[in-house]
Image 1: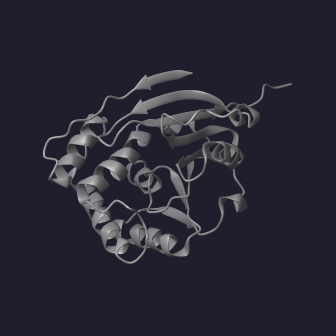
Image 2: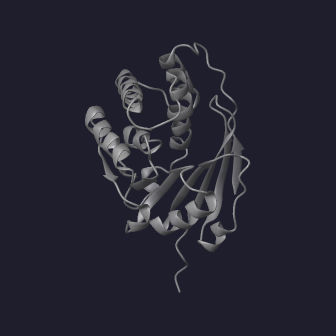
Amino acid sequence: MASRRLSRQTLDGADDPQAVLVQGAARLGLPLDDATIARLLRYQSLLLQWGDRINLTAVRNPGDVVIRHFLDSLALLRELPQKPALCGGTLVDVGSGAGFPGVLCALFRPELRVTLVERVGKKAAFLLTLRRELALDYEVEARSAELLSGGYDIAVSRAALPLSDWLKLGARLIGQTGWVFAMTTPREPVPAEAGLAGLFLHRDVVYDVGAGSRTLLCFRRLAPPAP
């Protein structure tokens, strides 16, 4: 298991969400071009507009949206395996809610076939609107992840389930080889269910993009040895 720590970011221009976004992404090694900035700012605008009508997120301040949602999602993005390591290039985001982190995966990694799972109908409608407005390519499943057939290369979840439950579900959603990512807090211990599900902890990243320490756990399953 590899463990590493990304230091807390101190961002200039905290009152300017665009400046925070650009600086934070650059410090994560993901510089943004003008077109991507425009799409992310449109995402932020839609999130706040829809948030007046449905419960998408408790975070309402534009700067906090950038830090707690956009930059937090980018911390995952930088850890995803590259295409040569993948079989079919598929990723599933379970409990996607307002689209974090799955929408950013679709935006920054367009070669991936991304599926967002959100069983709350109004939130799924937001994800469909977002897909149209940002001209992105991903699927939305408005049903329980338990009903999916599985076989994905990557399964991700951003604290949508207790970690032990997520590892059992994530292990079922990936194929014979694959990755399960869990975005959680440093206080949550790694449960024994990981080993029972045939997963091993490949990487443990503690990071802070400006909202306090978070933990990104990357589990892997390797194909069983040939008989």
